[in-house]
Length: 197
Image 1 (cartoon, helix red, strand yellow):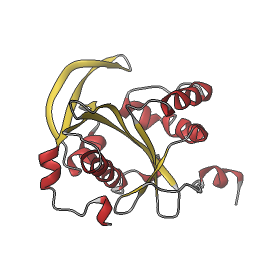
Image 2 (cartoon, rainbow, N blue to C red):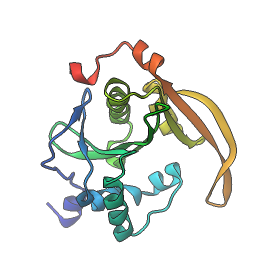
Image 3 (cartoon, one colour):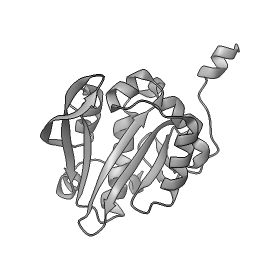
Image 4 (cartoon, helix red, strand yellow):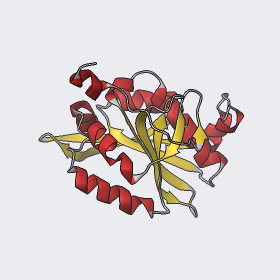
């Protein structure tokens, strides 16, 4: 194996999953995952679709350390059955009184368009509605992010509105789509739940 092939080889972790989807598992994100996250965030497609530029690895490590003590969010690595990390998913801004939260999802570029994102979203919404008192889970992305909009729709999210000219990216104003999945919509989904897998 050449050095370049070693760089492209998936990283297998010894993580213990705490939650399962159909073909993926979720394991708590740790500060040691900063390099992996930094690589994903440095991908130009992700930077464009999500609308950010990568910060320093040190800054990301510090943020992961701070987030670890934040009780209003749950961050997970998305893992294949063999332990290969293929993405990050989070349930953030959890409001237990109102029963609301927002989901963030970022996939390793090598594992996009394989239904892993939808599977991870299904698993996370099972956690939000099956174990937490959520009534509404929201997702936000710019309207040109067709990959994210497709993944969200496949997981049952409904677009409920557009915030016009809501973000600046690469010198252009972009509209932002607001999508949500409500408890009743999740309950109506005809699919096995995470605890049944």
